[in-house]
Length: 295
Image (cartoon, rainbow, N blue to C red; front, side, top):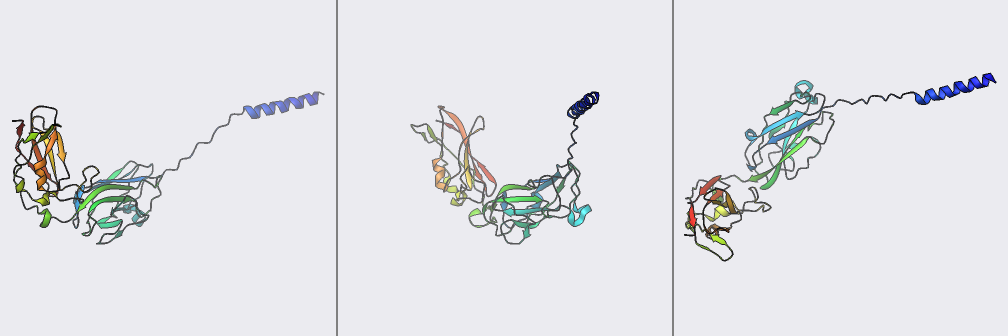
């Protein structure tokens, strides 16, 4: 009887010790990996057939927790960077292909950075890059895109953040024809004409004949006016003569005749205004005289 009681007590003690034993979780092991990203700044408007590499500032950084090997130490197994021209922001896998002629995701002339430095965690590096734009690049909206580790040599903690794209606008080579920037136009002269019953104040350009219709051509090769991707080469903005704040503007004139139709809305009974004509293709501004209205 005593033996059975003793055996029962031993079993109860074992069960108690089993369930009361503290369980120590294993420490989670986090594998250290690099994480490369790239970013650059570039002009918004680009002329086809030119090299804008000197105007591009490109930076690569490692935001991971392990070094990212460059070609300086790993040679062909180090990361590289490709700069391409595309009509969208989708980048195909693998390294880009160079061509003097445009094709989708074309590697620009001088656009491969193959001499790269190993980056420690949180370290960044700027690189010079060539950016020869094909002469037959499509006019209008395009994207410059940079892809780091384009040769896919670095195992990273995040493989989906290696591409950066910037919207740009491609235009044809200037000089001659409708964008003859050798022509310098006179400054506009405006006057107060009348005010209609709805409150529109009309301030036509009285020397409108001094300008060419080419100044107001449709310009899909230049940045859009809001959602209008076919706005005019020259925009006209109206400014308050006292505060120099923009009041109103026109970005879709079709010809110089439209300079006779400039107006703005105002609740005031009088004021002072002037206009600025911005020739975006030739990068010139023409400011008018300042007038008081009404006389």
